[in-house]
Image 1 (cartoon, helix red, strand yellow):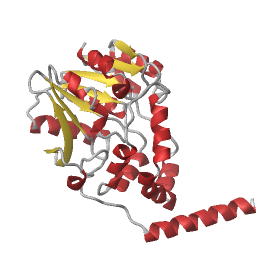
Image 2 (image 1 turned 30 degrees about the horizontal axis):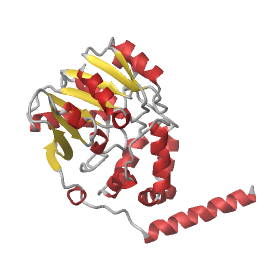
Image 3 (image 1 turned 180 degrees about the vertical axis):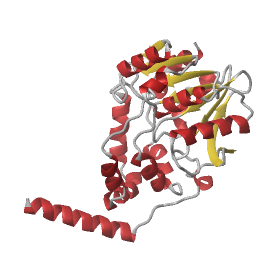
Image 4 (image 1 turned 90 degrees about the horizontal axis):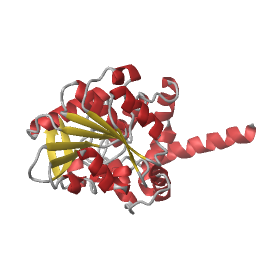
Length: 294
């Protein structure tokens, strides 16, 4: 016990010292992303787009997902539609503004639609974005919704006081500042998301670069303090929307069985994507695009 306590004390001291001599990158998003921005509900929002004609489709990523995750599906959908993928506040290259809640993200989506004159588009939400899609439908912001590798349900995790203590400890700050330089850890996490299926090679910097954005650490602490945002099952069941639920067959992050339950709750068809895990839009983009358009 004495040895364990000594190790903990030494690690804590090392973490405190490391944090004292380093700092968050805090780079303005305009210097990190040289693509398109729009002011959506007051938040400077980074986005990508494909296609010049047809009805609009808006693609919403999940937790920690920059909009590059849509780079293989976007062009396929863009053949017949105007397609937009934007970064939720807290992720990618969008300005960190807060409060990083489901309600704020839906308001950001609504502002994005108004700023670009999209009316009521088809809204596709991946993982955490599935909850945004369902909540958007409940607000009348979508003509149809597609839930991709997400059941739209809230995940509480450990008790609130435990989460808060961990997220505001010196260890979180140390881990956050080391993350952009820990390619092996990012590769391991992403490999798990792929579910062991074939996948494209993505530079780890594409995942970690947004951590350099101004306010990125505060954003992660803010949203994780309250658990992974989502809806309760009763709310999903009471939602009336034209919907499709789509899951990678080898999804190890959010299981296809959970997707089937949500499909039943929404009275929606369920589509299984072969040879794909949780990042199905990168692994089998043609099948995902076909499911979105069905």
